[in-house]
Image (cartoon, rainbow, N blue to C red; front, side, top):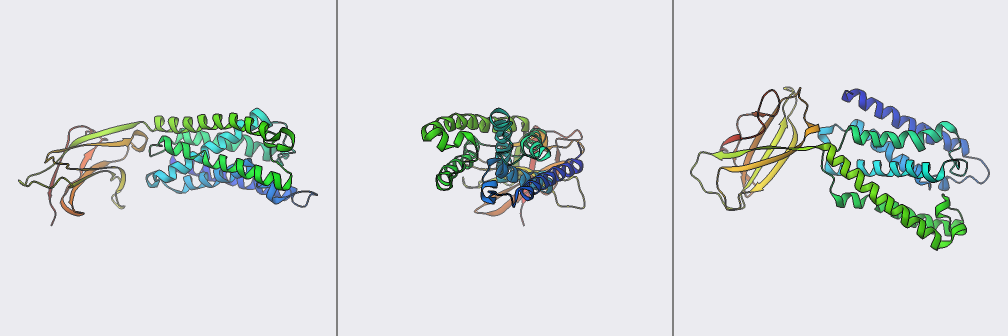
Length: 312
């Protein structure tokens, strides 16, 4: 699917989510006993709001502009929506009235459609940056905080959003036992979301060496920066696809480099180039002056030699 069509679909689905939640809220508002705070205390509503925001942001922010933080937030939203869909299917189906999503089309969007959409979007457009395991573990902080909030607020107002956290029916021991099982499942799901995203990202390596002609030894702290650039558009600045930074560490030229990039970041129709510069104490001493084309259109991905010249 072309990027413009995919982004249009993302925005349309995010809009459908906004319409569904707004309509359900408006339909219940004014009913005896209805509480807006209760409505927004459902994990379903909160996770859908996060998912909607992330889906829209993913459509607006180009893939090349996505930072590691952006991809971490996107992965978190995917996890939370997957939890919403799985928990509903396994434990809550048929309880739509008590879940305040009794309108069939609203129930379909927030419990079935959007959870599936977020997961499929993660699979079809995997993260640009690798998701470390520590980031996946951090995703669990929100469900843990939600659990604590639910117990504290439930004790105060005598209302619990879901049967498995209803202390008045199960007691604290029963709630904690069920929550422990859910936490194990959530941890496994978080690890799976990160692992699948990293695997689909399919990292590859661009290798070569950095040289300069001058007979000059540079200090160990000298920094070498190598960038892989998308230079397809002559009327726009080059877009950085990947970057590697390393120090001389007592070595001298030629300095080898291994630049990791995601295969899914490379479009065979585009033109890519690699450039490098050498910095001493933050100042550029040597830099590339010519584009060295790589990866596509028959250009290499191994043994790339970059001859740098002294910076003026």
